[in-house]
Length: 360
Image 1 (cartoon, one colour):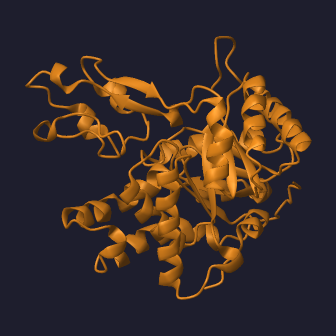
Image 2 (cartoon, rainbow, N blue to C red; image 1 turned 45 degrees about the horizontal axis):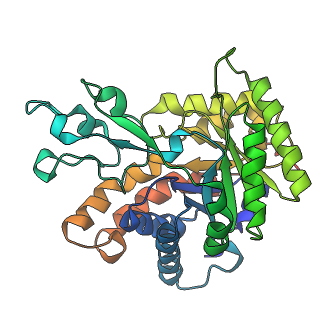
């Protein structure tokens, strides 16, 4: 029942993080996801920077510790909160006025929503804001283009007191190519909170602000070097998250290939510090990583988002239909926990071939 501490899991290449969603405010689901995946062995819970969300995640952690029968001790998962230094799909919600929808619309938006965040016409037909985590799949699905995306943005002055209140173990900053100054400003706000952090995670992919030539892995590595210098000056330890195809891990094997290709292209170029896969990761990811031979040893671990949520969706819904939290439905727990463990445990058992230590 011991398990590795989060720091040791990063060092050994066995790190697993649950991404509950940077704009997900479905408190019941967050508590259930946190409890089940903490019991399954994840090392970090990445959630929205919101007091109610943090409280729900901590309730889930407390449930998992009680279910274990022994304290987590050093193996207690870190609580991480996500922020952004600018516009980012992780920090948005869909919105539309259901009164504008034709009566005979087949509602493809409702069918493609993985979070079940679009209500049926009988329930009003609108977006259920607390469930929406901004994946954007409904936007192209609407035949009339009625769906908008609305940014969720924390004002600079709100960040220090909020982080001081939340007291997370780690913070993740989502950034893009070309946003060095914006990153520096957000980092200054994080430091002003005065919260001791185990890690400052930096999430970045090949998206960029503005026009110009298509970004390359070399350009991404140069941006990570810039962020590394900023973190070093701030006295913070980095965790690099390469965002292959954001919020798409529940789509299929192709997204796993995209995530691994980006990681493969950047792994030998990235600055010191643990390098973690994300964005399209699913149960195919580890197999694809291990095919890379010695390079696989540089993978510190993985973050699971959409696929982790979709795996538990049937059990969450079954509990909801009874008016219960999943953590309260004893007969549903074994099936839900088995699904979580099937996703997580291959990484927990991993012995990276020819492991290459990345200092930092």
